[in-house]
Length: 388
Image: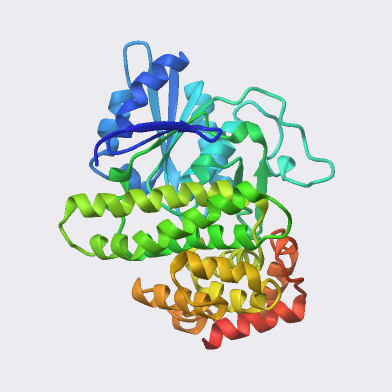
């Protein structure tokens, strides 16, 4: 595949192998003079990253790189990036990486011209500060197919000390341009391909099941689910060393589409799986996609009796017989891509249970779950996931 296509939803997206090479022209068109690249340490070391940075540099445009992102993003990373951006007087940010780098970049973009502390802008906070200052021109270049943060209007950042996750949300945080290049995901190793792919899957499924009416999100979620069913196993297998480059690119492109669609669909809402996953990331520092994969089967069994007709549609999309068959399909997929079957197998300590319940109960995702969730329900879900 080589053709680059363009579409808006509402973000202008340029999709295809080599899409990253359109960055210089985009920066020229935007008239920016000082660019801050935001990425993580792993991406910064990849062979294609330095040429991408150099392509953005010109006699009339300075470029600075901030690569201080790693793991689950925390406020100190944002603060360091803001310091780098202000020192460079950046009027544009190019975010390159997975969900962590993209979320940190959006938070940096907010704080470059806004006063106070990042958490002063927390979504839903009664006395939150307004987002009323200019946001730098922001470009998203994803290197994973999972979070879809490049088409999202929020950033999830944790407190350094408590590890509590905070959501910063505003439509102005939506990147002004996305360059979605499947070639940049080819080097993602099998375990990260699997974990990020299950993140995309969880977004799609939970968005479809979320309470409320949003037929556009529902349609997008089902098509994204079809793409995951068609491409995730192939993407993981090719990541393990199969050298059929064209087939590998096709699988990666399918998953990159699915990731974008998941992030669009979950504007409808998410559910209890994400509340449990957020707790696992907060308490045990688990990768978000892996945490979703560990919790998804138990949470889907919990929801099955409440919205059986929705599960019938999910099942039909992936070729399963019925709702229980769909949950079994998730478990087979998880096993096929090499992810652990339980919290115990992952090494999550059982004595973290009550703290996990506490954090999950306080999370903002489960109120959109189709079945109401209380502390006893969460405890049962975590115990099921421990013993799976």
